[in-house]
Image (tube, rainbow, N blue to C red; front, top):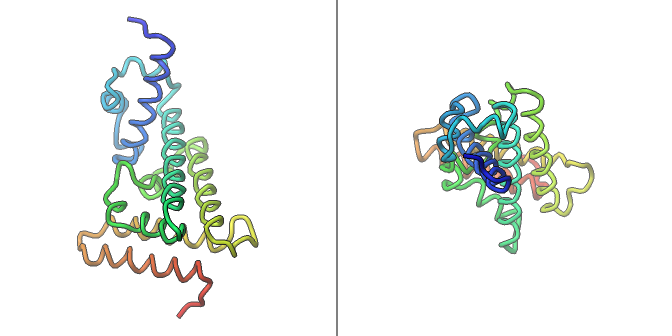
Length: 195
């Protein structure tokens, strides 16, 4: 049965959204096309009508995940009188730590992305740059370079902290990693020297 162009586009968007979540949960190589399409409620046969390859889908899904992550940061910042603090509280939280399928794609797929094609890596680079921009906008004194060293250090610290906290089975240590990172992010943002 043929589907309309509108339905085909809706199906494509569904596959991209589902792949965005499933790739974060299982990794690029941890899930096959059959399961990706099943997760979208579609058959594998329609895949190649919508995408040229699994890499093509990985590019689209990675772009969607990174754009969503940047929007989440912006939304968290917009809802608080201290926008940077809101991002810190959102990102370095136990809730975010537990969000494997919906959480930060840099944490979930960063090491996978380094082993992918340049096309798959591009959305991550673009998304990381967007995160730097958001951080620089939240720090009014960080306009010296684009991106600032502060933004680079903060994002690196936050991504590393969430990654490490997800690895730890010891809840106290996992939470300690998030708390320590939050304190250091605040210190870097203020421009305090190392104690």
